[in-house]
Length: 226
Ligand SMILES: [Zn+2]
Image 1 (cartoon, rainbow, N blue to C red):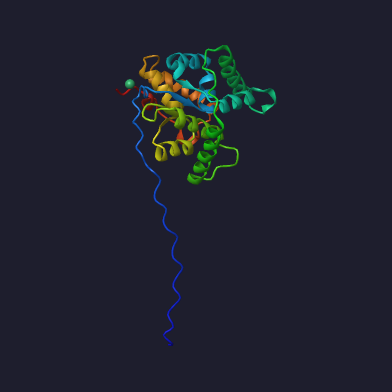
Image 2: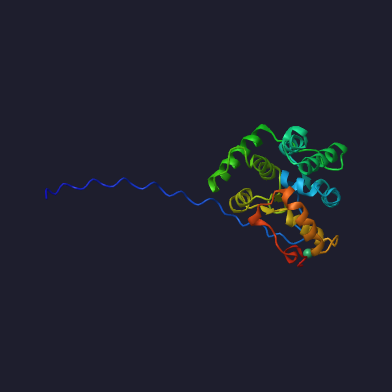
């Protein structure tokens, strides 16, 4: 043994501090009082039952926020060349027509800096879980708008996918809801029973794009509990 000091091990990379973890407001079954920043899947699901879309639009009024990117996605989906199923194209056309007719609010136009921020948010989603290119960009735009224009204590990001929802809740402290939360709001409002909401939900989940593992399976989950 020569007593040569062992080369020191390379130091471990510094552990990054955990991301901020504010607690988002808890949603009552009637929903928070603020705005509903809404993604494409939610609008497609609602519009596949046009009366439901009209009911919700009336309930929320100007509190329903549709950003320009989502309007563009819906227009693209509505076109015959989109390759989407006829029912999905029809639902997209319903939203597009209502926006043009003014029974849905007109689109909120994001600024360049908000679009840039959407790219950051999309990258943050990719850090939670690997997402295929091109996916979840709409949700990133909606969340960007909410974080720049919204009221974090009262507004809700309506998305079905869990990755954008986890980013919004766990990192940015924003309440989120899938389309089942929208139906629960209508039950709370007395517009239908939980069983009727469940029947509607079963009809629209595929068009809304609710991932199978996240689907509500019993009417009790849509019941008013307050
Ligand atoms: Zn209730």
